[in-house]
Amino acid sequence: MEKIEILRIESLSRAPLVVEGYLFKGSNPKAPRVAVVGAMEGDSILPLYCASSLVDFFKNKIEKEKIKGDVLIIPSINHYALNIGKRFWPLDNTDINMMFPGYELGETTQRIAKKVFDAINGYDYGIILERRPDPATCVPYIKLYKSGYEDLLAAKKFGFKLIHHRTMKSIDTVTLQYNWQLWGTKAFSVICPSDNQVDKKIASQINQAIIRFMDKSKIINYHIFNGYESTIMDRNTISIVKSPKSGIFIPKELAGNYVSKDQIIGEIVDSLEGNIIHQFLAPCNGMITCFYSNSLIYEHAVAFRIARIG
Image (cartoon, rainbow, N blue to C red; front, side, top):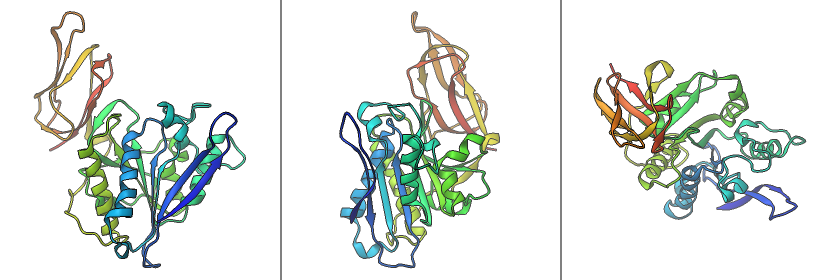
């Protein structure tokens, strides 16, 4: 293992920001190479944990000769935000994942993005560990933009239940996934639940999927059980259930559970009087992909997303 310095930014009032990567050299120079990017936001605890667990796996749990292609893991980029529990870059509240491919003479987050992109550009595959931006508990899944550069067949190698094949917005052109793909890397975003508590079961599912992908892509030689035959979903195949009232939210079904049309999947309790003021009914047969993760829900908030079946 080689620990490499990706970037260093001096600070007037505290220790410098030093972003490091862990490079595990492969034994076969012709094998594909992969880079894994962890937490880019200060509340991305599960992506940070998954990336650091991958470092431990490659450092201590796999024989060196089984690593065929180079593997670079960058567990964290936005240390300052992580240290104070703030989502974005603390000084100006900008999102590093909205700054790619970066600009070396620009604002701080643009310069950070440029240094990171220079270090990971040229890899055959790229994996981005992302936290859902909304307060939702979800099944882990792959997010791929409909950019014209995406590789759906390769995305199925992870073995997740779902691949969200998402229509691009204009703002998505400055994300890491799109720019990585634009420069020839097959990039995938692994979406993690937004919960701040580490769920080791979910983390294990995510890391097993990444290891499975690396094995099927001939980057490593480490066979594990097959995953799911991924279902490709888009906006047209997902039903959104919104809350008509505010109150205390009590889900009756969890992410990953299959439900039937008109089944009770949750309820809202009056926060002052304690009586049930609304029951959520499944609008279709399908699987709950995510649900609202806060106990207090607001009117018009998205309570459930359900991938339709049939």
